[in-house]
Length: 281
Image (cartoon, rainbow, N blue to C red):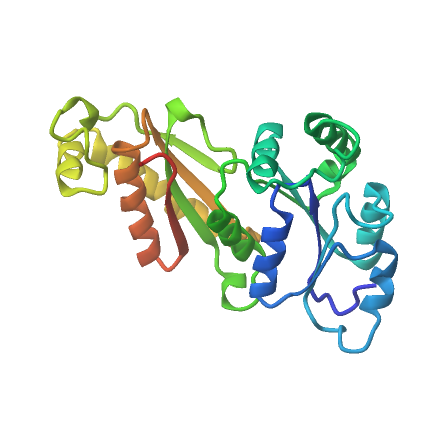
């Protein structure tokens, strides 16, 4: 049993969804990490001298000897571990295995697609049982590490809400890992000005153009007031990270400007703030 309440994490999920990246991030943040560790040895390892207080993370996937989703769920309850499930789309998994030229662990005697489908069905009990599910479809390696740090890092960030403010273009799809989506498409669009079209919402010229819209300040003021109300309450409730996304048509002008503006405001308000522009380039 986890009597000391030290953090114990079981990191699992679909092959190619980012398990290794997550474990490397946890190791950087002070966790003792064991990747592809035999499940039958977990309890004995935790009882060894020297591990009583050490934050620890185990990585389990379909390569793990005697891997069983049901057993993993049962074991997490017995020792008080949190299950972190990494998920993504079938298309992204295929792309990642193709780029790395690695073989899918369940596609030895079948196609990669069949291996992915089989693994997703096999791991389905973990989706509902997981304490936290992270969809890595739209996340870069840096974004995933930031998300892991926000939720699980040891030290000063543990008690401080981490906020990601991001921009995106609706024509490229709405981001998956978002808590709040704000639509900025009603604001005047610099895209239709031939001099501003090549620029981004980070430039003074585009910002000045958007600022001329009489609806901008009422909109931004309401957003800022809402954020000022919500974030302290989320922080008190124990939420570790929160993602706000501004969307416009292409994700290059209006959403970028609003993301920069709110992001700088939150930094000044002492939130651990990460600014991301998904579709700016």
